[in-house]
Length: 312
Image 1 (tube, rainbow, N blue to C red):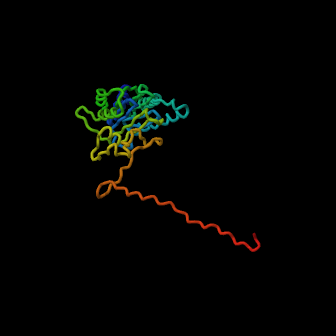
Image 2: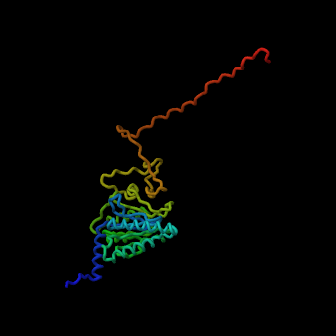
Image 3: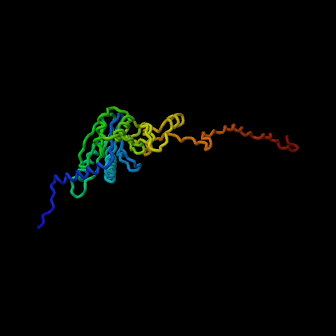
């Protein structure tokens, strides 16, 4: 009689953990960093459609690395859970800690079950408060462990190297522009040399408490990234000067422009057309003088009817 195949629980958990870690390490890193007005997320992501960073609720954001289909399922589940809790109770009852606990239970159950493979994902759940001290970043691993991160956190790819660079240069109370420059430099840092990541290969979003809208999530567009980083990809034309980008010196589009937010307004203007021969902007023709208002024709006075004889 043949003996059944047996693997010790310790070896089984070790094999599942190694499998998940290898899958996560193949992805590109994501950086979450505290700054003075919220939490910034920066990732190297050439895709413009498959986002690693997304909004969950008014003040809560979600970031992930690993297999896209797996963390996208988790994101959708988090959005549904937040909407149901906010509708059934109150919007203030939707918290980052509650969502992090729900994700931890799901990931832990999947990892410990022997019927399916573990999820090859790591997650960030971030929430901002009314002050910088109230901001929270929760990091969740493939096996359901939860860690409360302070200052900054890195997951996926060469996380140790990126975290080492951030540890040396990070300081509290940084502005959004300084935090963005530091995060991009850390993502391009390696043990041998540093590389420059083109702006079109960056996915950047933030939870910004200074926004007047209830929704504090915003994506930073490529024009805004080029303005802050001063970086251009191959073949990309120089951006116009700030005083020429909008009538009256409006400058580049604001960092809080959000195309997904119907309450937000998009800044910027369309550049004037140029003459195809001289290259100069066309000169507007002189305005025609206003036409004189029409004059009504004279009206003849009424004529009295003739009188009959004998009438006074």
